Image 1 (cartoon, rainbow, N blue to C red):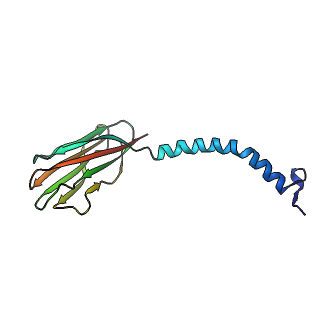
Image 2 (image 1 turned 45 degrees about the vertical axis):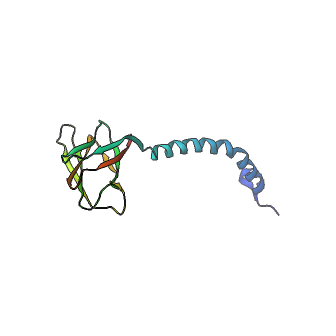
Image 3 (image 1 turned 120 degrees about the horizontal axis):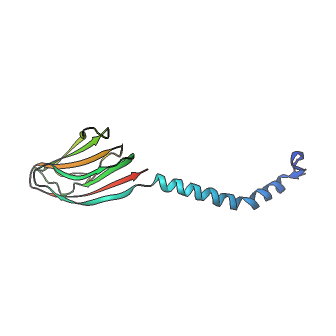
Length: 153
């Protein structure tokens, strides 16, 4: 005996299921469009800039980004060229207030042959300015490929 729901005019479970599935594809398509837009925004990191920097012993700017809106930035740095006796220092700089001072936030030193040749600096949510510098402090001057991914609001 089928289960009957008096509140919906005596419809059975089969009737309700058929009605729901007959209508659902149109609704799910709309929900999927909204969901896709949200996913696109979540996975919105895009390569803002990339290149190769050849170290010369001075503190060199890899990239400097300013914005009036919050943004997320993440740097990928290829340190595979480092050899025994080489050492580089990567500094990330951040400005907290629009009229504030750019100050260093993190310093990362890579020395010698790297077991993991791609360095992924932690993603940061920033407001006004983000700058990354590299300085080779010892060894033979090397070239470093880099890529900066940014997600903006």
